[in-house]
Image (cartoon, rainbow, N blue to C red):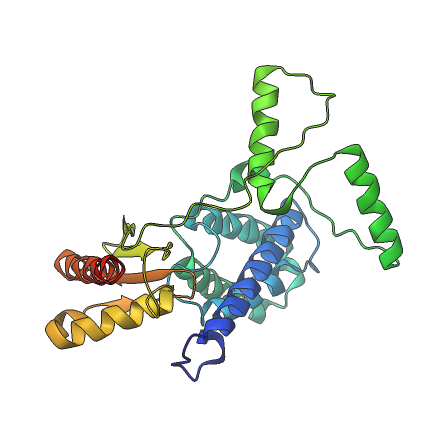
Length: 287
């Protein structure tokens, strides 16, 4: 079990996951309401509340952790203020500028937390409307699921992405589209070799660089998780590179090791520490 090293409710190992899910839900809610706002001239739309709620969450979010791209946020802002211009006559004159300034501040917060790496296909989906479907009882929900499975049989589980890829491939190949498509997925993945680890390097537009590790099968406890590897790296750097440690910003979770810095040399030192920890794990297995 991961050691809790924070008093912040949303930064504990499990709490960070719950907070991330709330960010995802609030982002999708804002996305839906902005879609409904596009072209509307009604003054009582829900989008402003959704944007403000997302901004409140974004203030507590880690940098670049919001599941929306900067370009999509810019699109939201464009739609929002186009709507505002069409309905501002409904606002008492003293409140117009104040409302606009608060909206601009909220969009600035959201954009600051937006993930510049996000690949959300919002440009293809921005004109698509989504409506929640509710069922009167669990029995009716199960009946609808059974009928859907009978019409479109598929073994989902963790294979949804593989199934969708197979569907696309079938269309490209002009295969028999009437034949039921069932994708078989290998249940177990091959285990990582002892000491094997893959470090990804990312450069952001603002000059910040990041190292990310998402697979820990080649490491040994307690370094075989994002938080465990972070602790191991920090302990190693405290002994040898304290000045480097001060220039790093860690943002790991149980499933991902993540560290950011503006210094490439500092991240190179982190990379060396990670591979040193991996080499130590391999040595223990070989002995």
